[in-house]
Image 1: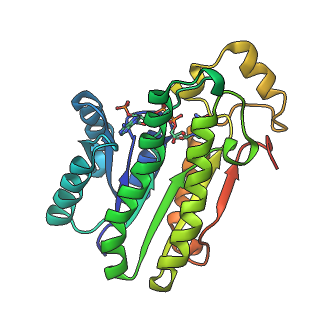
Image 2: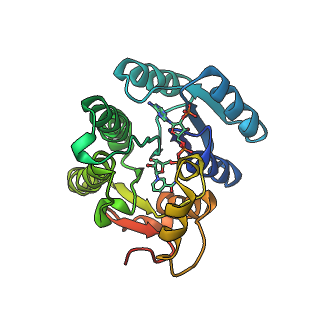
Length: 242
Ligand code: NAP
């Protein structure tokens, strides 16, 4: 049987890297992306044994998205699992937020998912099978002072997913979200230690999550046993928000 073709955006580090590695371990053919040649080479390296590959992709650039899909489709076949993971934060209280910080977070975290999903869904509808998994965040539902741009993208992602789920479900294509809480990556490394500790006080499990905790939920949603789940958001947050 041929291998499932899985595209993971933002696979150079953190959650995306853990997802790409886990899928590769489970036998998927994984294409992982990074914004730089160096990042793509790093992905090539860690996927090498599984036959997977790294590619450069800025998810804000529609031309790069088209080019990557064209390459994958012509060389390997249509994408069967798409994990929209790439994301950034540009935090600041609304009163002081710069327009460019609002716009770059919306472009990177939300508009990119519209573009990537639109491109992937073509092949999935034709194949009458496919999985899209979007990485949301606990702040989509909870809110977080200083993250109005980021929370807007993640809440938008969840609404987008529920709507697309209704449009593509009859073709057995599902779309779901995984909403991580506090996960130990470069993104949380940027947080002030006092703030991080006070946030951890609100986590019943009492520890930061690991990227692998998220990868496990993404893998479940991509599998055959999740074929009746669509439009859902799976929280993986140690109980931080219930
Ligand atoms: P991270 O360690 O900062 O990694 C971010 C990834 O996104 C990198 O691979 C980066 O590529 C890629 N990326 C950034 N801008 C991009 C662009 N314009 N085009 C393509 N790729 C781009 O972040 P993370 O913590 O693993 O987060 C991954 C996802 O989980 C994000 O969507 C984030 O919002 C979500 N999340 C994280 C947490 C957490 O606590 N860490 C919590 C909730 C949700 P380069 O290496 O090339 O820059």
